[in-house]
Length: 132
Image (tube, rainbow, N blue to C red; front, side):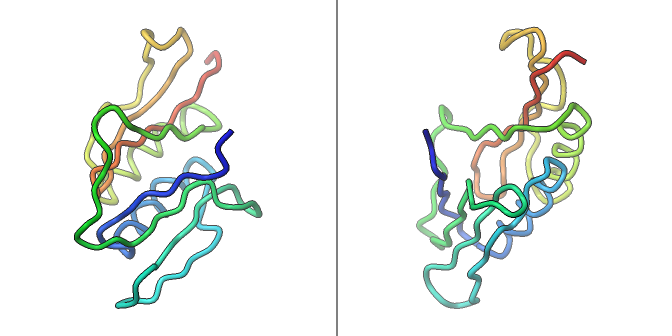
């Protein structure tokens, strides 16, 4: 359905450092980058190694705004330890805890997830859904 999703960020260098750290435990990384400090239209793309971008961060400076509280992005994790590592890495990189790693039984008996708010206010999640 979706080819990729783009988020506007206030500081592309800060946002890229955050997503480099937060997505690495999930097996995703920067697949391309066009960061030119001081220039407009700077962009970074993230996805699986050797693939195209599924998430693009676009520098928008002071006009960048995170969507409202009903919007979030859930990233697939390969296992529960990756969810834990995502949460720890995201917090260490400047994210805000929005729900530590654990089962979310109201979503299903095997729904293991962690929630973070990135430095620009975007709500993100890592999730693994399989029996332990």
